[in-house]
Amino acid sequence: MTNILLVEDDKSIVVNLTEFLSKEGFSVKNANGQNKALEMIENEHFDLVLLDVSLAEGNGFAVCSAIKSDHDIPVIFLTASSDEFSTVTGFELGADDYIPKPFRPRELILRIKNILRLTGGSGSVTKLGDVVVDTVKGIATKNGNDLYLSALEYRLLLVFINNRGAVLSRTQLLEAIWDIAGEFVNDNTLTVYIKRLREKIENDPQDPKIIKTVRGMGYKVDL
Image 1 (cartoon, rainbow, N blue to C red):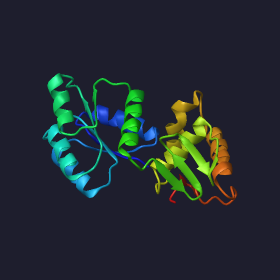
Image 2: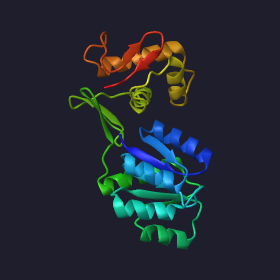
Image 3: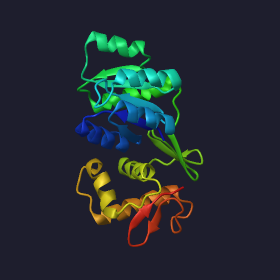
Image 4: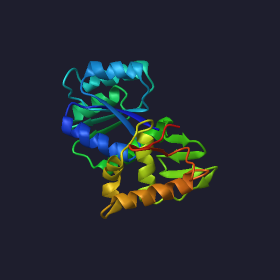
C-alpha cells in the first residue's frame, strides 16, 4: 500500500483529504508542522509527501529541502501560494510537482499516480494471502486472475486493507461504503456484499482466512 504523509495545518483539509485518499486505497498520516513532519519521516516509511508551504510551525520549503537532502521521497507541494516565486523555489528545492489550491481531488490522484510512476514509487500493491490488490491500477487478482470486483466490492476490500488488524463494526463498514452505492445500503445489503467478496477472495468462503468474523463485534483482516 502507498504510504502518504500529509503535511498541512488546516484541520478541515487534513480531514477531508485524508478521508478521500483513504477511500482511494492510500494510507495517510499527517503532521501540522516542520519538526513533527521531519520526525515522522525519520522514523516511518513514506512513499510520497504532500506538503503545504505555510505551516503552523516552520515552513514547507525547509521540510522539502530536508527530505531531498536525506531521503529519496517524492514531494508534491499543495499550497495557496501560486505566485511564480513559490513555484520556482519549490522546484529548485527538488519538489516533484506543485499543485495550487483549490485543486480537484481527482486531479490530485492522477498527479500522485503519475509521480509514483515516474519516480518508481512502490507500495501500490498489497497482498492478502493469494489475493493481490493494485491500488494504482484499481484491480484485485487471485493467482494471477482478475477477480472482477464490483465498485462496491472493491471499496469494501480497500476499507479492510486500510484498517488491517482493526476490528470494524458493521456500522463502520456501512458508513464507509455508503457514498459509492448510489442508494440506501442497509445491514442486509452489507451481509450480501461480504458474502460475495468472500466467495471471490477466499479459498473456502465457509471458513474464511482473509475477512474474519469477530463474533459480536464485526470483521477484521490481519493477514
